[in-house]
Image (cartoon, rainbow, N blue to C red):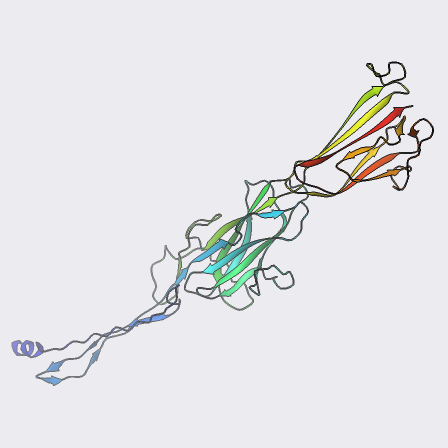
Length: 354
C-alpha cells in the first residue's frame, strides 16, 4: 500500500470546465444547456496513463422574466371634448433572456377626473412612432426578441362631458407570456417558480421585473403612465336688462310700462383654455316688445344678421316703421369665427314695450 501511494504522488491533474457565454444584455438565453465535466491526466511510474473523464453535469438556463414599460410622451397629451382616436405612446422592452409575448392592458386611474371611452392598446407594427389604424391593429406584442423594444399606443375617444383642465391617466400594463408561435398570443405567466425547488432539467420561471405605476415588483409585468389633459373653451353667457325711459317719468326712475325703452345686454366670456370657434350668439326679441332700429351694438366686431321668421332665415334688413322700431325683427345673431381663451364679447340692443 505504501508503494502504491508513493507511485501516485507524481499525479498530474488537469480539470476542464466547459461553459457557454453570450454578449446579450439579457444574459444567456433560457433553455441553453450548460455542461460541466472534469478530466484527469496522470502518470504511474513516469508513464502517462489513460485520461479519466468525469460524468457531464448539465443544467438548463432558466427564464429570467424582466420587462420594462416606459412612457414616450414628454408632456400631457392635450385633447378636446369629443375628439376621437387620441393617442398615448409607450415603449415595451424585453430585458429578460427569452423571446416573449406580451399581453397589453390599458389601466384607467380610478382617482383622476374622467375616463375615456373605446380604449384600446395597439402595437406600432412598422415602428414609425405614428398610430395608423390600417397598419397598427395588433393588440399584443408577438415574439419580442431578447433586448428588443416595441412601441405601443393607447388609443381612446374623449367624452363630450370632459371639462377644461381635467386629467385622465392611463397606465399601459405589459404582462409577459410564453412566446410560442408567431401570430398567437401566449398566455400571461401567472406566477414564477420561487416556491419550487430548482430542477436543472427544465426551464423554470424567475420574475425579475420592477414595480410599475400600476403593478408590483416581480409579478411578471410592468406598467407606465401617460395622461390626457383637456383644453377646451368654457363659455358663460349672462343676460341683463335695464329700463331707461318711459312715457310718463321720462329718464327719472322709469318703469316697465307700455312705451318704455328697455336696454338688454348679453355678456359672453370664454374662461377655458383654448379658443371657441364658430360662435353664434342668438338673441330673440322678447314678446310684446319691438326692436329699436340701429340699437344693436357689438364688441368686438362680428357679423350681425337679422331674422323676421323666428330664426329660419337671416336675410332680413331692419327698417324703421315710423316710430324708430321694426316690429318684424324676431331674432338677432352675431357670428364670430373665434373667441380666444380669456376673452369675450359684449352686445346690446334696445326694445320698446308695446
